Image (cartoon, rainbow, N blue to C red):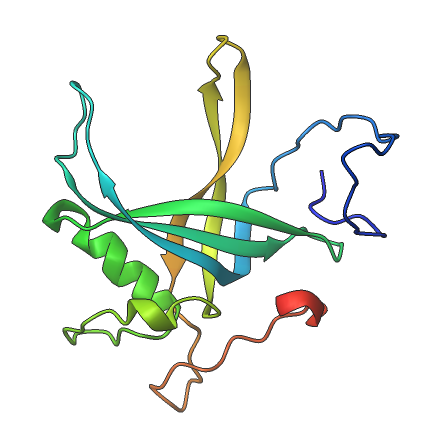
Length: 167
């Protein structure tokens, strides 16, 4: 499935629909460059059997490129603002260049959208509300920026895809 067609446009309320449904296929497992496209502050309220207590929640959307195409995909990732997952918050901010190894930091949430990083993407199997087996992508890890062997400063991410439309 692609998020873009060759001719994107609005569809009128009374317009005829000619497209067919498409089967969603997850991205292959691997490492992907990403751009943060959306950030929303929320609150996590656990259910009765949850492993995580109530806490603030950062809802983050990242955009990655489908391998071998110019198509992009948006993936959602939640960062729970709790001491149990502080390592994941640090991992994410290291990936986008806000946190340096071994140094405490204060996240700059307002500067997150548009930031670039790299993530390891996996495939998660689950059952939908009707009990059907499904697959979806998930972020397994956010990766540290690559560094130049002669420098300890992170190098800017070099993306190999077309930079049009936000990339």
